[in-house]
Amino acid sequence: MYAGSSRDIRLLELGPGRGTLMHDVLRVFSQFPAARSATKEIHLIETSPTMRKAQETKLSFLTQTHGWDLHWHDGLDQVPQDSHKFTLALAHEFFDALPFHLLQKTHHGWQEVLIASEPDPAAPTVLKPGEQSPLDIPSKASVANAGGPFRQVLSPTPTPSSMLLGLSSARFQKLPVGSRIEVSPASFKVARRLSELLHDAESEGSRSAGSALIIDYGGEKVYGNSFRAFKDHKIVDPFHRPGECDLTVNVDFTYLKEASAELATSHGPLSQAMFLHRMGLQARLDALKSSASDEERKKQIEQAAKRLVDPTGMGTQYQIMGLTGKRKTALTDEERWPFVEVQNRAQNTEAGEH
Image (cartoon, rainbow, N blue to C red):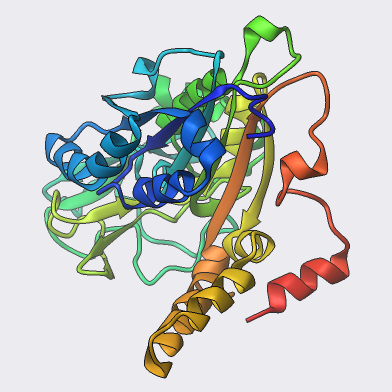
């Protein structure tokens, strides 16, 4: 509200699922008169007719009650540029599901790792699983196929895509031969477009047109072996029952920063644990426990909160990055919170709680 300078607000979510997160946001906004009256539009990036119907069912009561306009778009490029409104954007587990290219650096340059059907043991281009490289992350599932009709093959020569993507970040050029990288040009494009929506070109840098939160798996580095699949809440081979598994790859937050750097200022990322602690998780937890009907319910609430900040799980696996449209004046600590520098002792205390 402060950063928006009394402008009307439009909310934007990329990949809203069944609308649960946006419903929570709208429910909170509806409890504050200033936010309730300032909110005018909700924009959802969703291509599935089935999911759009589920989102409409979830959100229609709140939007109709408060007179908020609800819009759907197939892509972010369909959202109109409107610096007269302040855009608040959310992307929760969106970037990890976007398409990516797997590249391997050879003496000939960056070559693309492709998928071939029908195994051919005699083919010299079959990639064998090797030792874990510095770009890999620990995983119970290998990127390589453990069996079945699909296998990975290395393109015989650099492709136009591999040559272009290999040059898309200065970081990639410094990697040694043998390195693998997972690069998502789709993520780069989306991050760039998002930064355009947050940038107020008409004000000549005097104000921002919006801000965004990106919540996802990943970190500030490129990954080489994070591609994995989930089926029935378990990690399975990525080639297991194609079309029936959820596929994901870790997000290179530095790549998103590079895509948006010209038009937006990035903040973080912070671990989910640190973000939630700084945003008042303990106070919220105490309030929920005090209103719980019995001890069993209190225990369930506390366990759920601990899972969110577990340093061996969600607390560190999820990273949260902020974006604000660029402006000439620096953001105050109040505007940047919780993405602020604090003393190491305070950081360690936050990370160690719960």
